Length: 102
Image 1 (cartoon, rainbow, N blue to C red):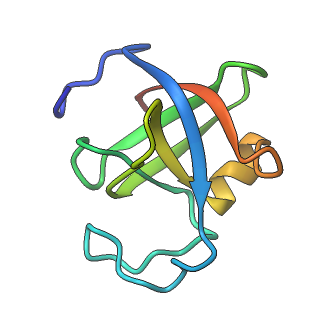
Image 2 (image 1 turned 180 degrees about the vertical axis):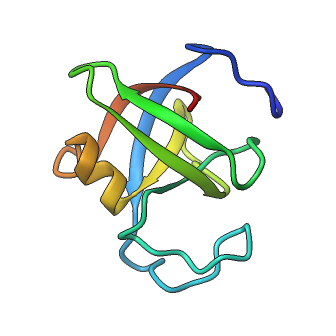
C-alpha cells in the first residue's frame, strides 16, 4: 500500500495498546504516550494523519502514525489507549474500522 491511501481503501481489524509501552520509544523515535491520539501502522510514513472510522458505530477519530504494527493477522491498525477510548472500543479490545487520509 505504501504512502498512497485512498478513501476506504483499507478496512479491517483494529486493536489498542498502551500499558507496558507508555514512555518507551516508538519506532518513529518519539516517546510513546498512551494518552495521545496516535497509532501504529505497518507501512504508512511516520507523521501521516489518518481518519479512523468504526464500522459498527460510524464514529470517527483522527490519529497520527508514530509506530509500527499491528502484528496480529487481520488487524490493520493499533491505536493508543486514548484513541481506542475516543472511538469507544477500549473495553472490547478490538473493533472493525476503515482508515483514510485525514
